[in-house]
Image 1 (tube, rainbow, N blue to C red):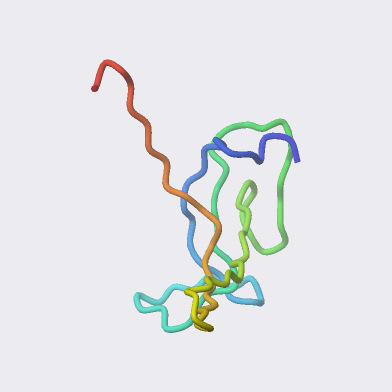
Image 2 (image 1 turned 120 degrees about the vertical axis):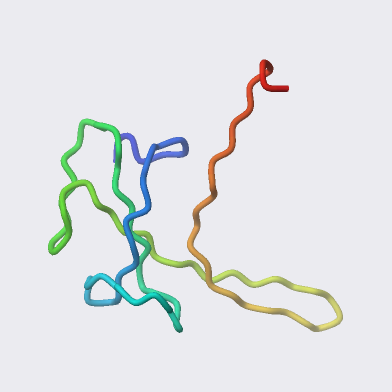
Length: 92
């Protein structure tokens, strides 16, 4: 989709289960099915998923395996997101 690329401005909206229902607990014991974000800029495409407000999208977790060597490996799940960070030459 146009605009859904690195650098898109979004705001965290919440977590949802497999049925798309928002998880409203303070304590989350298992990995949610989706992490929800709200698109903050007009990207020229109307996004509307059933049961969610307009411009709210979900990201599924991915499975990654780290090989530690000597026959030891670990598989873990995480959401493929990264917090933004910016610094200008003026701030340096």
